[in-house]
Length: 342
Ligand SMILES: [Ca+2]
Image (tube, rainbow, N blue to C red; front, side, top):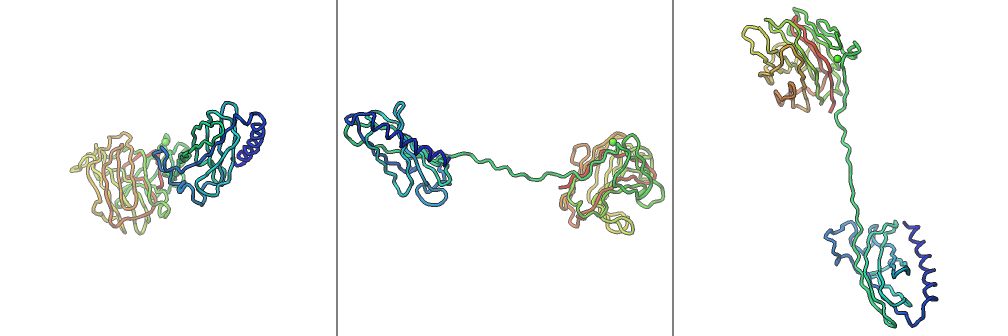
């Protein structure tokens, strides 16, 4: 824009020369143009960024151009801004109705104010035109990119391999792109389990989701799928959350159909008071979609899209991996396991 500005200067000079030779002095008048501040502008928006109009600084006017137009005639007058108000005179201008436009530029060559008016130039007198300029504004759209959840585990078992998983108890077999965890009897409080990312400090705030289906063995003896999250230690000492999910078809005497229990373990598998328990409405021997969200010390548990439990743990475990399991000699199938890190 700055380059164009100086091009206009040269153009103006030629036009002035042409004009002065083309018209008889008797048809000439002159005009004095005063450019006012934007305060009288009709604009309802106060362009804060450009104020004060005639002050210094990066938002100030550096240069300007006044253009007179009448038919095919055009006269430009450039000026360097040095004080307020801007007061320019044009002499030897053909009489008649002229359109006046004003453009004011900052030091970078951006037009920051513009205005226009009309004036009648009369023979032998000096006419006056006052032009109020208003700020040239644009819109600024700022896009802030907030990192979304980061998928750190996406396991569908379709390649027949459980990458990164470690078998702890029982057995785990991949069949038809599903992993079947089969428990073994006699393991206190557990039966079969596979773990992912146990003790990993970078696995802190996440959503752990998977599909789950009961396979067999729901007949007496506290048999059920069980999953783990924020599993920090496992073995001599257990530091982990654990979620037991009783299906709706348990035949266990005295059991409540669909009962779930979420506990935190620190040390041994000695039964801990539940952080949350109740009825989870798991489907019978069908796939259920389970999501467990752990953000800070807030734990949420969803079954098939519905929030089953939300609990705040005052003495939380803050990091650790996840696990898929089954209790005693039952079998539980899992698929489409995802871990979204937040
Ligand atoms: Ca699969």
